[in-house]
Every structure is written in C-alpha cells, then in structure tokens.
Length: 164
Image 1: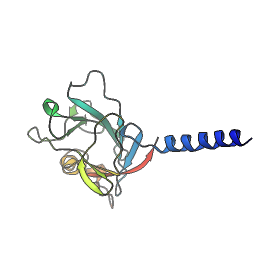
Image 2: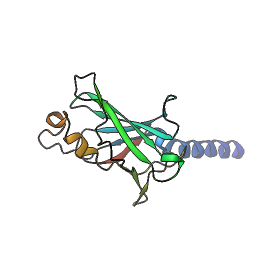
Image 3: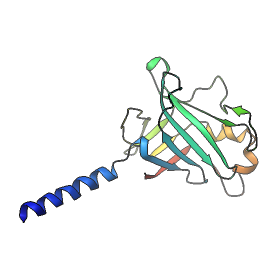
Image 4: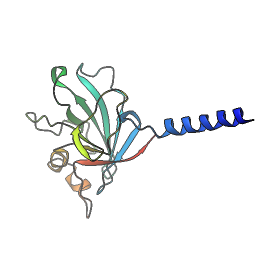
C-alpha cells in the first residue's frame, strides 16, 4: 500500500511540475494597458535561415493579426525582431511597420532583470517581452484611429499571462 501511495504521489508531483513549465512555445502575453496579445509559435518552414522564433500579435480593436519574427544576423549577436501585416484593417497590401534602417533587439525580463530574449528551443519564458519601437511604429500607421481609442494606450511591453 505504501509503495502504491508513493507511486501516485510521485506521479502527481511530476505532472504538476511539467504542467507549470512555461517556455516561449506555450507562453501567452498581454499588454497591460491595451487589448493586444502576443503569442509565440513555431518558426515557419519557409522562414529565413537565421530566424529563431516566430510570434503573432492580435489587435482586436482592428480585428487584425500581425506576424512577427526574431532573427540573429549571421548567427551571432543580439536577437532582432520584425513585424508585418495588412497596412490597414481592410487592406490586402502588406506593410512591415518598422523603418527599413531600424533593426531593434527584442528583450525579456527574467527574474526581474532585462536581457536579450532567450531564443533557445525550450528556453524559459520571460515575465515580460519588450519590443522597442512597436508602439511608435504602429502609431504612425493606419491603426492609430482604432488602436489608440480613449483610455487605451498600447506600449512596447507584454506581460506573461499564462502558458497553454
């Protein structure tokens, strides 16, 4: 009986530990002052060779999903982010939203400290993801009228909400 109880206790403890493990692959983030959601996903097969992560941002006020990527130039250095999507909510034309000469790094907050996003497969999900220049890039787009409405004030940081 003791062996059986010990077995079930170990199964419960192990499964609880696995269920709470949060990596980029299953983490979901939300803006604290806006209804924007950021979710990481598998890198597409047709992605550039130096792309190490992929994500999308849901902007429900505009009913739009923007596709993003994280890459490391030449395989060395800081991870850089990019984003693209419809130029306007009802448009089929695609825009990149960042100035062509800007290549901002992507950061995470881990245990209260800011550092480059950990892009290794299975890496720990940060408490926050920071995309410098995201808000200003979208402010100067066709989404200004729908995304900056009233008290809604999107920014560059996304807080970890849960792990799926």
